[in-house]
Amino acid sequence: MRHYEAVVIGGGPAGMMGSITLGGKDVKTLLLDENDVLGGQLVKQTHKFFGDHAHYASVRGFEIAQKLQEEMAKDPNIKVETSATVIGVYPNNLIVYAKDGKEFKVTYKKLLIATGAMEKQLPFINSDLPGVYGAGAVQTLMNEYGVMPGKRFLIVGSGNIGLILAYQLIQAGAEVRGIVEALGKIGGYEVHAKKIKRLGVPILLNHTIVKAIGDESVSGAVIAKIDEHFKPIPGTEEEKVVDTICVSVGLTPLSELAEQAGCKIEYIPQLGGYVPIRNERMQTSNPDVFIAGDLSSIEEATTAMIEGKIAALEMAHNLKSTDVENEINDEIQTLSLFRSGPKSEKIRIGLEKFGINVKPVPEIERHGVQIGPQGKLRAIIDCTEEIPCNSCEAVCPFGAIHIGENLNSTPVVDYDKCNGCATCVIACPGLAIHMLKEDVENSTALVGIPYELLPLPEKGQKMWALDEDGNYICDAIVKKIAKYPNKTNIIYVEVPLEFSQKVLSVEFPKRESPFVCRCEEVTLDEIERVIDSGITDFEEIKRLTRVTMGPCGGKNCKLVVLGILSRKTGVPISKLSHGTSRPPVKPVEFSLFTKRDDSK
Image 1 (cartoon, rainbow, N blue to C red):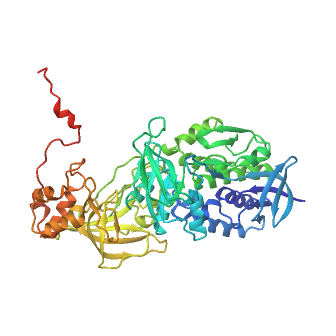
Image 2 (tube, rainbow, N blue to C red):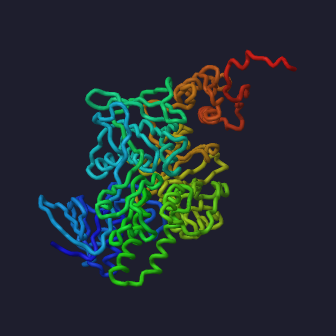
Image 3 (tube, rainbow, N blue to C red):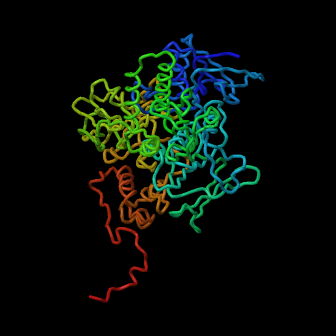
């Protein structure tokens, strides 16, 4: 039987930060974690984190885990037991855990439980087929063990985990056939959604999965639109040819050990499910037990680390009478900043049920996308959603980007100070910044795209330029590849001037020709063949291919077709006829034209 002043259960971001803080306050601490390596969810996260630089903004998740591990290793007050599975928490502050096939017992004065959460399940027909995974399981296989469980994926759920997984799958060379979301809006950050939409991944709102297709493993999926009661609408079913289905419909806290420790548990849906009742300083109804991280509320790793620190500071005060009041208040104020944006509304509502209110914070400043002065190499920031992050402001060496006191404010650029260094581009966790410079004299533009895929293109290579939805816009010529140690590289491509503000991504040309007109499924090859045959009049191209004649009326593809025509003929778009706009300008039912208003 061993005794410690403090025991921490769970070696994720909350538990690690709690242990570091306790050790720093001279508290003898034991950290227990069931995994071989500390880090929790951090070790499988290859993306850069949002937040501020005091809390590892712009650092990739697995690198944060490494930094915290290194910090813990330096502290003799911290004892770490990995591969240690806690069996239960018993009266008289007793913990029993298993390690190497043996049972161990330890007692404590104060306990921090940071056991995290598990993935929620979604019932649908054949959901037990091999090939149906939780999103976290796929991340573990892919990012920790280098095992790709499939080739063609469907993701169910558009929260941050689902969106991030989609991007990571594409980075690993897999094909993501789509994301279905039951709600009418994207659940995660818009910058994450934009990042994958630019790569051509469709996000279908008000949709769900109905069944998995297959005998011995997944060979497809049936999805359908749903009504306001979340019921599938008959006749809207659609089959997707996939071999893997990833369910990402949220997390639920792992509260069993807290309940065994005598903590009162309450069901708070806004916080994720059954959570221990606690105060602002993370102390539960059992004064010897504290909680932090996803066990407290389902949020980001950054808030988990802050909660772990707050809990540990209060524990140190209880144990050593250490004066930590100012430190705790500073961390609580930081939490309030992180939770002051619209994405944290549910968390605020949930915390209010415990009598915890987010402290007053500075007002959020909101700004739209700025284009800046034409002809100057400059940063274009496509980040208009109020999320807690100031990476671009923090790294700008010239003070050209302003966020303000509230981390949830959207950035504004002072283009008199911006010199085009692109430091903000490689720091942005959402890849929401690109570079732009127009060359009006030569009717071209240089666009710098953040690029985290392999292989990298070569200088002089032709690529396809894509818009915000992954649609082909025009051909692009690679002019420069800027490589950076953090693996966010920048591909500078030259495109026609008229597309300078539409190009947001690039990809290697594929063997199959891309759709230029998605409504009528007209490909680039078809349009080029017509032009090569001698047809250079836009109206005639339209009649021969039906391009621009679909439901959108050419709103998405007319300029692209004119750009192809301009490239093939050498005639500037401004000199080309763009055809005639005919009614109806929007799709209406054909029966409308059989009805008359005889009242006049």
